Amino acid sequence: MQRRTVLKWFGASAVLGACQQTPRLYDMQVSRDAGCPCCHVWTELMEKTGRFTVAMVDVSDMPAYKQKVGVPTALGSCHTARVDGFVIEGHVPSEDILQLLAERPAGVNGLAVPGMPRGSPGMEQPNGVRDPYDVIAFRSDGSSYVFSHHA
Image (tube, rainbow, N blue to C red; front, side):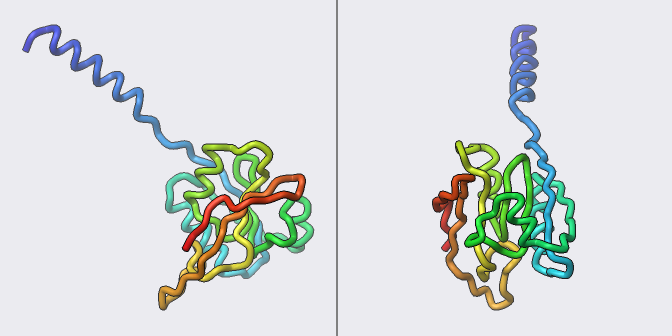
């Protein structure tokens, strides 16, 4: 091998190594009513992505907590998470959360999956039944829009 070929190979290796970044790990705090079993399932799914470190906190008055962090009443679900300045309400899929964190749309406070749709993350059914559902992006001014749809 010629010296130039070896030097080019080492240079290319250094450039390729610099391009391979470890994905960011986000801290997530999940607040829930004590004893809710689906919240544990959802948090385990978040941790399995390798992108979230999750801390679960039991809250005695979830409606008051949801109001405090700005979850619109109509978008409520069983648990409320906080991650990197955003509020995540209910069984939001990890890919939607990661998209929100990457795009950071102007004015959006968080995402919500209202209720507890069958087949959403943490609400999987033994018989495989899935309900279609929307992930809703909400803003502090009370407006919202469909962020994604899951059939």
